[in-house]
Length: 67
Image 1 (cartoon, rainbow, N blue to C red):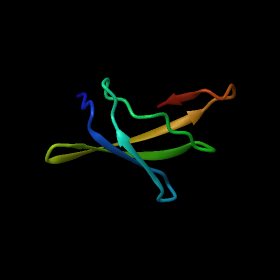
Image 2 (cartoon, rainbow, N blue to C red):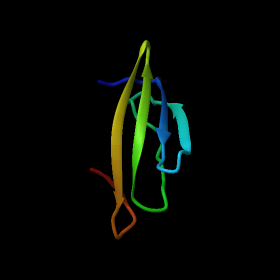
Image 3 (cartoon, one colour):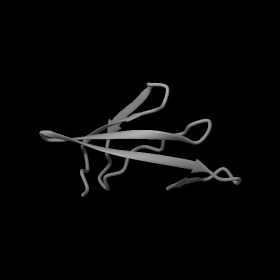
């Protein structure tokens, strides 16, 4: 389900967050962390909120992979 141009908020473990608007393809901006951590993504879509947990890992050549 793609929600282009919907507002989103991504929470880090320390309680800080980044918010923005999904692009035309339903993607967030790139989020960088100093080490691997679990992030929570909240997408606002009309009258409901969709929550998706994401975990990112940084491999040895410093590229990111979503699991």
